[in-house]
Length: 458
Image (cartoon, rainbow, N blue to C red; front, side, top):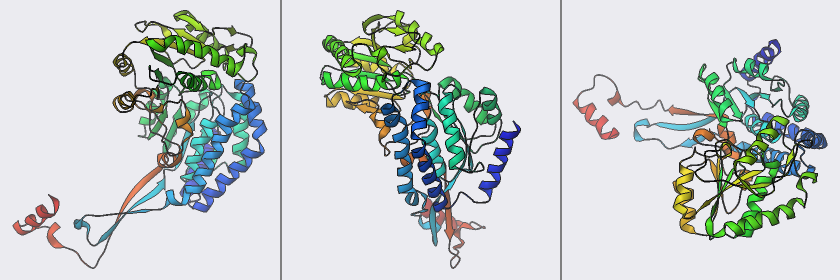
């Protein structure tokens, strides 16, 4: 507790002294972070392999590479993002000028999850540093090997009074949440998100909550089925389905159901071979607890494809599980966070729309359809955090598309400019001239002055 308080106090003094304000300082910090990440790339890959069984290729594609892309984006746009913006004013402000001035919040707490332990720690950190904040990072204890590498990288890249890493378990989380941060950024489950928000309310600290939920994938009869299943399986297979925006359940129009099932089986074999469990490139489940939870879901429906499990390797095959749309089973209540995909059949598109709208607002939605009317209905009439038409997952890689949830799936957004905005307070400044001072706003407010006020304000 004392160490955390010392870091917190040192960061307060460091920020108050203006050490993070200059663009050059922020760029230098990001360049140093990039240099350390590149130097420790193999350490990161090894840690991700130990924690989640990720291949080197998947580790780079989904974690290291995307972090480096975020650093590049912030460096390239930092001058533009940090520049005060002149805005137009009404005649009541004449003579005057109006500005919106970006300023950092101050001390920021970032709490990251275990499923993408490197990316989901570093990506918000990059935005927070670019915006000029001091940061304490709390990585997940569950992915302990990656957390150790993160701590090592941060120690090399930053002075502790600028950015610090606090490892450990729930006791350190409790200590951190007792402190008055200027902003809290949390990625994880809705259950813990509620706790974070409650703790933050003590000091009215603003929060961004990147949560999860049950993200639907819909395939209608007009879709290109082979391409739809391939792209859907790509999104579901990444990190063995332990992805907050992975397709969580599949709604398939009844006329193409058999084709979807056959294509899922074919694509699984193409992706992972005849024995996905023993394919070294297919990731494992994070721990025994989550493995047991996932295996229990297999009894909630009829296994159409896959279903194989290995408790020693903590691996489960990509599995397509047919369930009843009216079933109130666990797999349709919980966020799955694994390679099991429930399949639900529908006859008319309106049924699928009604079903999705009856659930909590999802973090992502994926629609495979070549009908412009169906695309319009799902993109405009159904609330969700973000998503894709005729693809999955790929909206995350676009820096010009803010990423975040809505309702039960979170609040706030980041990536690119949205990330800079999240960790920035936009301060409004009105600069008035002194050579003219109209009298109509001052007392006494007679009939002529009120006529002028009404003239200007109505």
